Image (cartoon, rainbow, N blue to C red):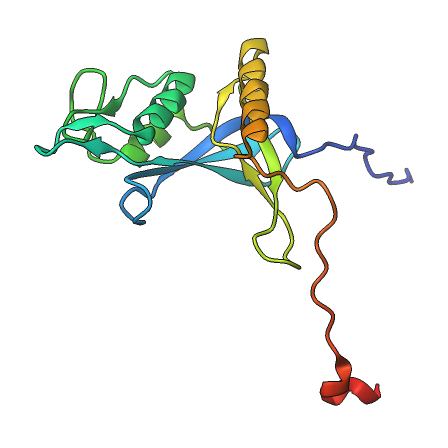
Length: 197
């Protein structure tokens, strides 16, 4: 009988600039006060069994008549849509429509049906920056987040992500955890029933 030997896999880092595939979208726009637009893009990294979500969010600025005049949501959404090859967008009334001017009633379904791959894909055609965020409270573990910039997995796309990472780090916008977790505050056991252990 043949011996069973587990397959030796090469170690893969799941932080830094990583190849990934878009496997889903979730529209959370209107659920929070801090963003007019919030679309979560579900990404699957090469060699990973798990997915991570990248949040593309921002506000839409309107004039006194309710006509869209700009906002960081517009810039971020169009950057994402450009990478996806999506011609849809936000019209002057702040509503979703496709490149033909037809209304999109469900942007989540629209994006998922056209631009998401299956979760068992082997086509990692996008690249993004995955990093451990500095914990917000002492003693808490860092969590892996995705910087909200998705690019095509080619030399130009990788250079664009790397340039954005450097700019955000230089400006202090990207706070990456690089050390060990901050230990929790020590507890004095003398005040607890456990002091005799």
